Image 1: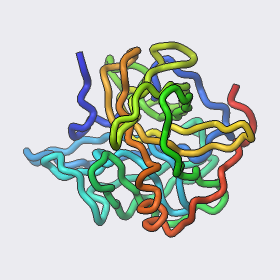
Image 2: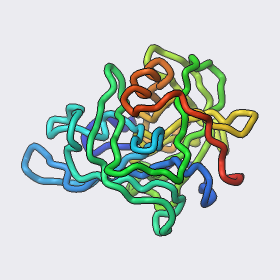
Image 3: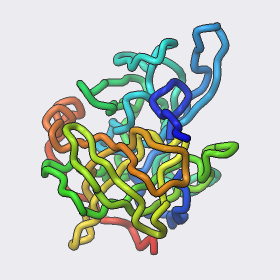
Length: 253
């Protein structure tokens, strides 16, 4: 049984992951959407995950912003969306809660850039990779989604896990769970979650974002959208260069 995560309302915390220590991975972003319109005139609420990649920009999944027919949209944010940045527990008062005001969709892949109403100046953004991903590379992901597809609700504490790249296919990367378990996997409301390298010098670099996959938890392939081959577009849109890799604040393990 699969969960199609590109449908309206289906965004993708991590099943069988571990809680993030407060102060780590502060670029991780919870996106909360309210009063999303349906074609019948009703509304619903949803959520996605993302990452701060520039002082005023979040990278997430393109399908997180859509019209009533489920088509991805650019321009003014289509429904009220807030970004919670810089905290591991949603009830904490650290970090920032800022409105999203604009969306830019990448061409031919499930990635969007969401503009914050005001810039974040006290959290180091996650730099964008410009290197072609390689099969077998271990990536870390952080997500605010559910921990199970059954009665799924967004997590109240940021979760993390490690994943292995199994295939590089055009604009996509396929990944499977690596640690803490083989069935560590993205879940509902994790759409747009960042997959990033943790380098030997302690820096981190964004490689791809969560797009979709089977019902969680699972040990199958998960589809993510790569960023390296659109790094120029991302940097032009956000008004940044390639950036300096960010060092984590403390240890999450």
